[in-house]
Length: 82
Image (cartoon, rainbow, N blue to C red; front, side, top):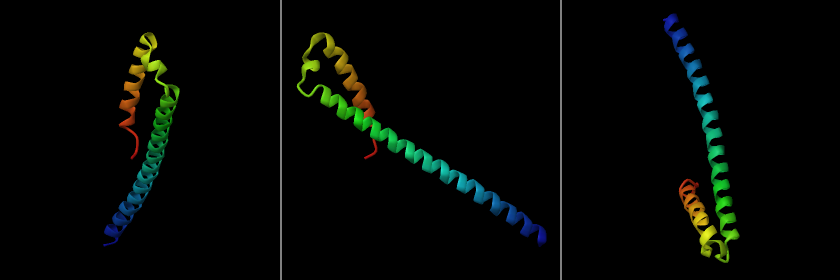
């Protein structure tokens, strides 16, 4: 009976440390995702501010590059937190 109590105490203590470690990692990941989402949103806003008059989009030489940057931004927008 004493051995069972000792084993149970060890398992309970180990479980406590494992769960607390996982909670800390989960909080760090949530913070990282939040910061990434904010950065993507800021980048999207800045990209729209840069070409608010459609000058880059209409230019043949710069337009191709700008359209590609917009495609990349649209792909990134799918990863923002909603």
